[in-house]
Length: 264
Image (tube, rainbow, N blue to C red):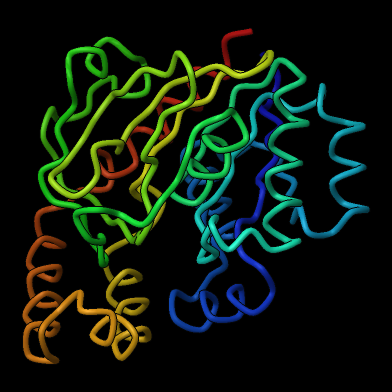
């Protein structure tokens, strides 16, 4: 086939975008763009933000031209249900009216799940702060192409306070860990196929450490750690895990999704 044409949907509002650029040295969408171009250098990529009505209208008019759509991570929380969040949900719902292959990461997974009839709530077992340990791919996940060549148990960059607590009707659970039951998910909605990941194959650990450090006071105040010393031990643990993580295994799901969308 010809070069891929991908739409990346930014998951942050302007304020959080600035925060990510400062702490992680990139917005969520630009970070994903960089990764996709590392994996498929000739890919054509367009980035939009659903809060900007003119961008979403143009994207929907051209939606049949995209080989795939990626919904990125972000710092908003779905149950706040602001006008901006409603626009993200509405855009996802509109995308489902077309034959799309969608990769939905972290916030993106939550948006697409709710748009497809699922539910999101604060994680009942706490949060992932920079890392998700011992994610296990289940039997259904082992059969799904998104996990081709992925280690059956793995640790990944991750950052989320909320989780998918009720999957969309007919969804298939692909992977879980001790914090969130839904870590990997496959479902269809309307005419679209959606692969969702609660963790971040698109981020590196140094970025997660920077994001965590920038949120330190809030994280401790919300009782995710007892004190600053425990928080620092956690960051030290992430630094040690960083030494073990290789690019190929970290980004495997994005690479696999790119292979999936090459097949018409």
